[in-house]
Length: 255
Length: 143
Ligand code: HEM
Ligand code: SF4
Ligand code: FES
Image (cartoon, rainbow over all chains, first blue to last red; front, side):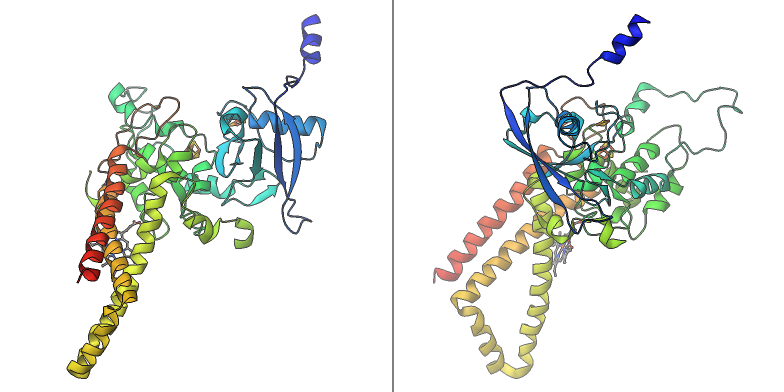
């Protein structure tokens, strides 16, 4: 019982009492009644380890609880907290203020996504595109029917796709992509990287059907290998590599 | 719908400042491609002047014998060389050549596809374009 109450008493965040502080500029916009987005400024103390997400939560706690921000894991695992931080798409929970080397930290909602409110954006299209490429193993038999009970894979076979399985669907890559910036029908680096993840999986037999889905006028050919997706990916997925390897199949460089 | 998509638009697509030399190369490739297309159309028009006989041809060719004409042709040389060399790099990349091998990534997750091979390709394209432009300038203004 005593333990329960001590958990309840626990501070929800570490009080920040550093002598260093930054100006945090937060883009505020409610599509229901605002004409355009406006910045609100807050002076926030920070330590070497303070993340941008913690600074935003500090604002919510002490200054303005109405700031809309989506987060959950606080450890670059759930993919919720993507936003534009000082001009680039980054995860707020994975970006330390000290690494930005700036006295002003500006946070805005991710580009190429519709705004729900303030920093929270809609992920419907990201998830729809992801679903479109059939993000699951495709084969006629299943573990339940096959005698083997599981489909074995060698460590080498695992290496072929495990990097791409790191994707947390944060959408940073889609936000950085120059094609996404002008084409709302483009399937996008996130989904294309996942198409490669399954095509490269030795257990999967759905290569042809997936290649057919992405061989579309708003599919893989809209990628110009600008590489911005890979540069912003917080999990080392490297969508640009996956996409070019995938295109290799369609161009006949690989089989 | 489109309004609410919040696409970054042409401005965001063309902004080369944020994502390293690869994005600059992407931007230069598009620009030089469109520039060359424009030049190609103008070139057809220019050479069609031969239908006006030698006088018409010489008259039109004189346009390129001016300072502006020389600078314009220098730009075309630069676009041509960059577009060709970078085009070869891009085509290799598109086929999966030199984009690295899948491997378990480690922090800080430097992407293997943004590697020195492609960076060398981009810088070579820029360097060769610059050298060709200087050679062009030397020939045209050196008479
Ligand atoms: C040997 C010479 C050439 C090579 C190797 C080459 C290669 C390429 C490649 C690979 C692309 C696609 C780039 C990407 O995916 O982002 C491209 C785009 C393009 N090229 Fe070329 N090209 C050459 C000559 C030309 C010429 C002579 C013209 C004009 C008449 C031209 C006009 C274009 C245009 C308009 C684009 C589209 C640009 C864009 O929207 O991004 N190219 N070229
Ligand atoms: S590929 Fe990387 S940047 Fe894109 S959604 Fe997945 S984790 Fe995020
Ligand atoms: S809060 Fe989960 S990724 Fe940032």
